[in-house]
Image 1 (cartoon, rainbow, N blue to C red):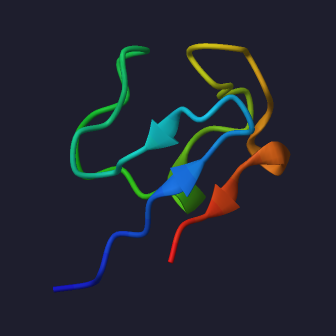
Image 2 (cartoon, rainbow, N blue to C red; image 1 turned 90 degrees about the vertical axis):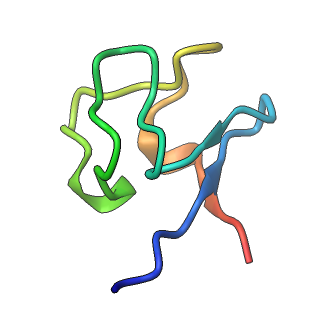
Length: 54
């Protein structure tokens, strides 16, 4: 099984692909597979602002 990386927004929201998010992103959706229009559910930052967590 592929490791699912978590990504953190500058506002400290963490996108966890195992749980998805509150914007109807289904659990199991990798960060790379999020739609281009997806933004942080807390501060609305675009995907480019997220950093992968180690």
